[in-house]
Image (cartoon, rainbow, N blue to C red):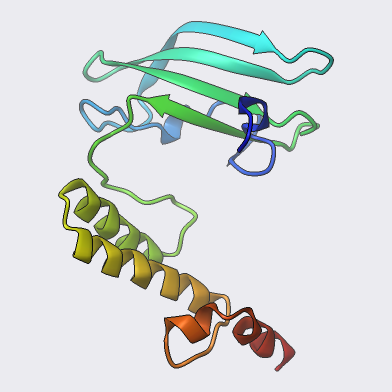
Length: 159
């Protein structure tokens, strides 16, 4: 992403409203229990695109998070939106819901090992998540290098 105006344009969450239910409180780890206590927006000159600046209050611990979010400019009712939260949780307890379970497990372990500065273990877990994702897309090979080779996936598609 080269500009904040690109937020929500090519990837993100479904819908044009902030997915509050997916935001985790960085203080108590409760998920989706927020109310908006402040909202401001900035409109992009010469278009309908806007950046939203929300302050949310956790219904559990009363902590605050700031959320910068935006819906896609040309969503026409079926668009995407994306967001960034500050502060973000320092612990990871869940992986994104749309990920396969095996990839999510390895990703969580990688993130936890990075937090704990276990660099070797983090690299192994990240590598494993990548390898599972490639295999889910039909990659073949004797090792990860061969599986990353684009021709590996192309050979599978041609079969």
